[in-house]
Amino acid sequence: MFRVGILTVSDKGHAGERQDTAGPELGRLLDPGCFQVAAYQVVPDEHEAIVAQLVAWSDDDGLDLILTTGGTGLTPRDITPEATLAVAHRLVPGMTEAMRAASLAITPHAMLSRAVAVIRGATLIINLPGSPKGARENLMVITAALPHALEKLRGSPAECGAP
Image (cartoon, rainbow, N blue to C red; front, side):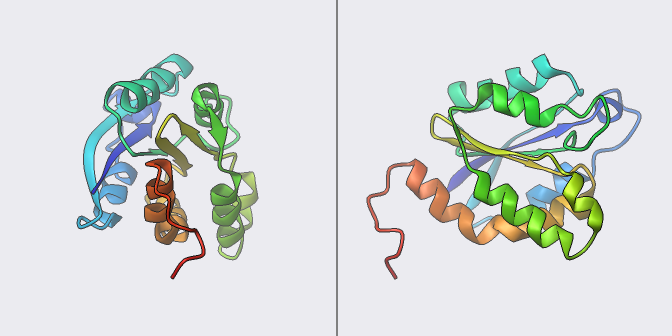
């Protein structure tokens, strides 16, 4: 069982001006036989708030996976990728490359995503879009690879190409 944190980055959601629907949608999409949503939070589009939550969930709570939703676009307040990179120990570019490639088949706006996927310690952190539709579509692209990735982060000696 992998423990997951879902972090919604939204000024309006944090202020109570908009109900977060993307974060709960991500929780519903995760297989409950494999993933347990252990933490959920809405923070504003503030570098320090995002960094603090990612570090706490990774370092203090030891979550296996953190999914962020929101703040990956081009507006001046969209800083989730920068905050995520600030806590990164290693990058996992293939995940976001796959998400963007699949999304381009749906919308040309996919090329505007600045989402990143990183490792901090033994925690995988993945940025997803802020809309429920975009978050859902992007998570579905990487879902099959998540258990293997998380097992590897836990130190599994199994061969990657083994049946």
